[in-house]
Amino acid sequence: MQALRYWDYYGMTELFTDLYDKAMRHETFSNLYDTITSRENILLAYRTMKSNKGSKTPGTDGKTIADIQKLSDDELVTEIQTKLKNYRPKKIRRKLIEKDNGKLRPLGIPCILDRIIQQCFKQVFEPIGEARFFKHSYGFRPLRSTHHAMARVQFLVNHSQLHYVVDIDIQGFFDNVNHSLLVKQLWNLVPNQSLNCG
Image (cartoon, rainbow, N blue to C red):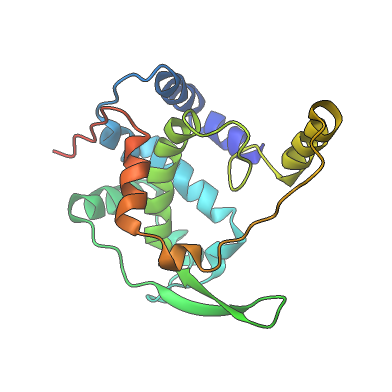
């Protein structure tokens, strides 16, 4: 719900809703790059990142959200718009996180400015992708949680006489998946898209 308040504050709710509606109707998108690099979208991305506790964790450049906070809104917008004209993300810092079973899970921590830029793209592409995703998929999606998944399971048990739940975890999925095919599948979610990057 906090995200929705941020959308309203920066006047992005109507735009994101329009992107979702157009994706539902399989319409063509154009000039998405202008939306991604707009002042409002950049400031919304910054605000979203600032409220994330991970923003205090430095990347390979040693900077955190505290360093970005020293910039004025105009300076931040100009910095990101300039970077995106010839964008090259910085290297990612690798950190190993201990799992419950004692094994280590590798975590990649991008530099804070790269995270804000990623958020700029995510905000624009997410409503488009959301319109095309399976409606009963609940993982890592906005306004959905494990509670929604459990409610769906309960519904199926009560109304469809289904009594088994299968929990599957693909070990090292993102380490082993063909990233070219994955990106192609994601790109196909957006029909007739055009970033118009100039």
